View 1 (tube, rainbow, N blue to C red):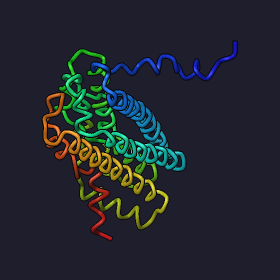
View 2 (view 1 turned 180 degrees about the horizontal axis):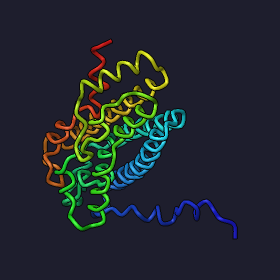
View 3 (view 1 turned 90 degrees about the horizontal axis):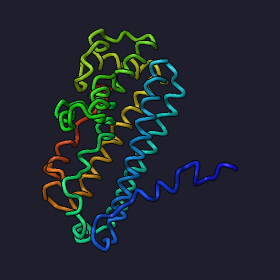
Length: 260
């Protein structure tokens, strides 16, 4: 029998994954569930793309790397646009089923933590929020200790013939990226001498800016929906989200803007 569309995409199983918990159920709970499930699917795809991007960079394959950046950045725009859909739900409509979330929260999304680690935003505290010995904790711990996209970019620069400082290539991979005047000096040379490699730098800036845009829009969506209430998973809600804003993933690429 020929393979069908439904069989290939597992549509029957996919459409059974939306299970509202509210009485009735409340009309808007379906929207909430579907939107967040779609977010998790896009997180999975972005992680898939960044893993591929790291390989392409470390192999000094500039053209495929640029194409992969384009795909990731396009997906990020979709993530931002999905917030427009959630914002069609009023605070009262969300309140009608919010208690059914109990202790669940987007704060517990392990895929978003993987994404943060891949982008170099690493914190022992976020790792400790997942129970040790579980498959999720083991996966996160592995991701926590592996090279970030920035580390792969530094290897790309080295493979392109640039004199990347040894301390940068051998840094502690479990720490977030810190600004470095030596790296900034190198990057200024890249921008002045090598348009193609500078294009990779600019795509990293685009990615950093895209993540900041998503964080800001997500914050405003939460604020207009629940105000300053505590998050369902025990987080401080809007206050926690505000603390994540305006922290660059790749600080050296922002610092050099003052130098041109």
